[in-house]
Structures are given as C-alpha cells and as structure tokens.
Length: 443
Image 1 (cartoon, rainbow, N blue to C red):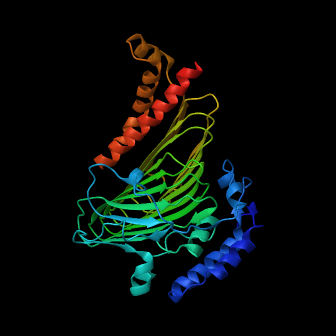
Image 2: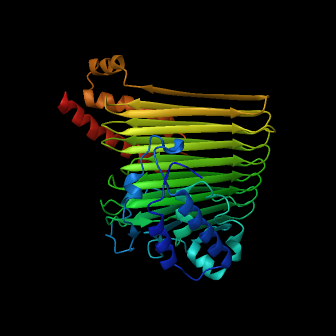
C-alpha cells in the first residue's frame, strides 16, 4: 500500500460502484469487489509516491467524473483512426461500449475470434474466467483497480493454435469527448501456440472536452506465439489518458508493443512484460511527439524470469513548447535468468528551451551470466546541421522538420504495418509543419 496516496475521493467511487451493480458471473463480481476494496485502501497516487514523482494526477483525482453516454457521432468520427490502405477486421467501442454498426467483424479469418467482452460474459463466461483480470494485478495499482471495478465492455481477441492472421486487427476506442466523462476500456488478447497476429489499438476523441480514459490491456502469448501490438493515442489535447499494458510470454514466444503518443493533456502509460519461460524475446518501443503544455509519462518494466531470453527497448521523445516528458524504464533479471541479453535506450529531442524531460533507465540484475546495457540521451537540434541544410536553399522550418523526422525515423521503421506507418509519418510531418511555422514567426 502506498503511504503517499489521496484517499479523499474513495467514498465517491465506492458509492458509484454500489450503484453500478450488475448481473454477471460470480467470479468477476468477486474480482470487482476486491478491486474496489483495494482502491479504497490505495487512493489516487500523489507526487510523494516515487512512481508518480513527476506526474501529478490531482486534476483527475479531484474530477467529478460520470460515465460517457455513448451518444451520437458525426459520420467522420472514425477518420483519425482510419489508415488508408489497411484492410481487415475492426472492432469499435464508443465510450467503452461495443458499436456493432461501426465494426466490421462479419468475415473474420479462420482462427481469429474478436468479440465484445460484455457479449461473451453474457453467453460464455467460462471462456474468460481463467484470463480476464488475471494478468494485470491491482494489488498496488489504484488505476488498474478502478478499471477492473468499473469496466463495462471491451475487446476479446483469441487466436487459435498455429493460426497465422494475415491482416492486422483494429481495436478502436472512441470517446465522445463530453467534458467530465470517463471511460474504462479493456482489451484481452490471447494468442495460442505457434500463432501470429498483429493488433492496432487506437484511442481517439470525437470532441475537445476534458474527458478521462483509463484503459487496461492484457496480452498472453503461448509457446512460440508471435504478437505485434501497436497502441496509438490521438485523443483531444484537453483529455486525460491513463493506461496499462500487461504482457506474459511463454516458451520461445515473441511479443512486440509500440506506444505512439500524440494526444491528451496528460498521459500516463505503464507497460510491463514477463518473459516466463526460456527462449522468449520481446521489443518494447515508443514514440512521443508533444507540444504546448502536454505531459507524457511512460513507466516500463521488463521482467526476465527465465534463462536464454532477449529484450530490446527504444523510447524516443520529441518535445516542443512547454511540454514535459517522463521515462522510467526498469529491467529485472532474476537469479535463474542466465544468458539474458537486454538492451534499453531512451533518446529525447527538446525543440524548445521550455520543454523538459526526466529520464531514469534502471537495471536490477541478480544473475551473473548476462549482457545488459542501458542509456539515455537528451539533446537539441544540431545548429551545424541546420546551417548546412539552409546553406543549400532549404528553409529554416523545413530544415528543422527534416532533422526531427530523421530523429524519429528509425523508430517509425519498426512499424511493420505499412498503412499505419504512413499515417503516422503524415501526422508527424503535419505537426512539425505547424511547429516550424510558429518557430519561424517567433524568430
């Protein structure tokens, strides 16, 4: 239990929990009860908590949040989550509830199941009992406890043994964006032995109101499964986004996740993976592009529990205006995890003298036959490179954009879904174009 918590709002959430009682399987009702009890003890973390030292959740903790209504959307509401040239199935949720009209699940490929958690809990709850809420524990995590207590719906994705899913599956969460609303998205991905799947999880806002999204994603890869997961956060710059991705790998598995953050006023993402058997490999990557007064905090943990496993991690931040970034990346190598190979890097580019970054890469190694490295860099644009480009007739704004794009390019190259990569490249250049124009005016 954290001694640096704000418990003043706990009674309000307890009352809301009692009012939201619903008919559901006994095992889930018990998990929810345990979760809300845990939250009542934990409360919201404060900046006196070491894990939240640089991220103040006071605006969330003090907010009077109500569930999103799932109201009507404009015809182009999904435009921000539409990746030109990307075919394949899509499951859509509006304010955390399944939207069958905007989803395209009628022709799922053989071996892929994608459905609403609420629907499955109503028809076949036994299929979820051993997995849903079992990986993202809430013992010391108040935000996960809240999601577990209150989520109404979410996506369940199951890939059959040896199935290879050719097209990426899109999971889209749309917040109607009404001020003062909260949504609790939940995703469970279960990849069977020797299966392969790509999942794109996207968060967008339909309006500019100050709303809160508190999400939890659980990913399990059985023996030799290969899961590529992309999480794109493009919500309103008035929004708050807190999220957790919890992953578990079994023998010889591979999981990669790329976190791409461009939106929200405040973002806190916790990404954790356990390499739970020999021969596992993982890649945890992220790109943050923010400006104004945006704040993004990434906390990651890679737990090497068994021997002969590899992990690779690269997080990059591009910060402009008065924005602030936080990166805390921890790698744990357990005593039995011999022959571990772990690489961690955090690189940041500050485009403004008012932008800030706090970075803390960490290694905790209890084994003796390992190869582990970590590092962090913080810098500004190279003035000589800017001068070189301008001397060859390239404008100051365009030269600045080219250098920033070059900084981010190697991470974008890790995105194996071409339509998604092109979409993000356009977003990045558009953002840099606006920032560059403002910079030229100020000069």
